[in-house]
Length: 104
Image (cartoon, rainbow, N blue to C red; front, side, top):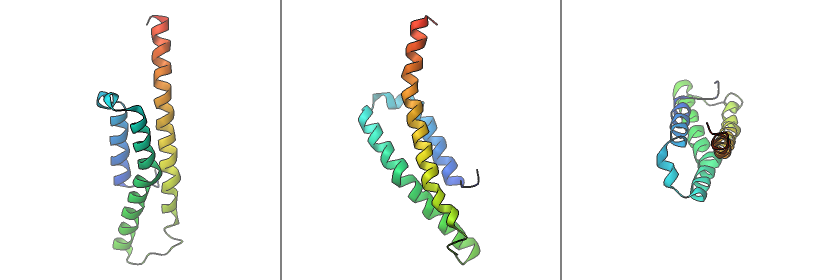
């Protein structure tokens, strides 16, 4: 993906692995939603934004605002990623109920 750097890939891999981890089943459901909202709405895109701007500044020396406007797309990409993760979180119990009802 064109908008991701190494930090983005690393964080998204950790989030996806934690999503399917049995460790999070013990955590309160509402606490997970609040923590995930804070992470995906503000903390992760902002951190990625700062890392990318520092990378551009260190490699090119001069930061032109038009040249790095793609960095603003990190916010909607993280919002979309968080929304998809939330959607799959809601789908998991539906599929497990359907499996148990069919006897598989």
